[in-house]
Length: 203
Image 1 (cartoon, rainbow, N blue to C red):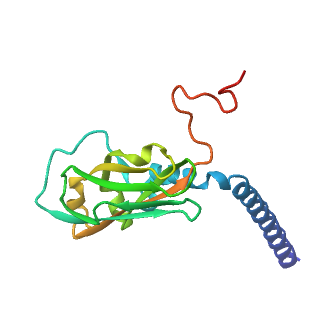
Image 2: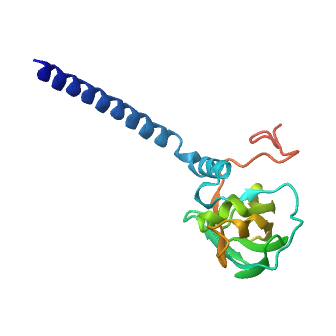
């Protein structure tokens, strides 16, 4: 009898676990569908807060110490399929000293016949470098609004934290890659002084 009760208890517990898992999955699917439009910004926010998936860090001030240790930084650029832009780094790679403040440039061009606003997400590879890759200024902070046929130069200022050479996981690395991906912004932020949609020219 004790065995039957034990088996019955385990079956009930197992059934309860299955119900809980099913409920969690249902909520997850519903949330995914409901928030799919925000997946890129939410992913970026999460990664930036945790340093996960090669997300770089935001620095408040420039680095003082500069090491003779150098690494080669490669620059990557991508656009999502539904954004009719070209987006390329103006330098394929730079050799930089650890702790050295460095400026790099990208160029974006709108090839469509209408104005488009885009925003970039970023990462650095390999992932272990992310905690030491500090951006002082970056075009990815703001939305970029391009008129038809317009091209703009986009700058990023960064340095690699000197602690990089003290970490066993990074001190022997000689190359890393900084990449950006542009995606379209369906509801751009309203610019200062910009009229609300539908009110300009009203009479």
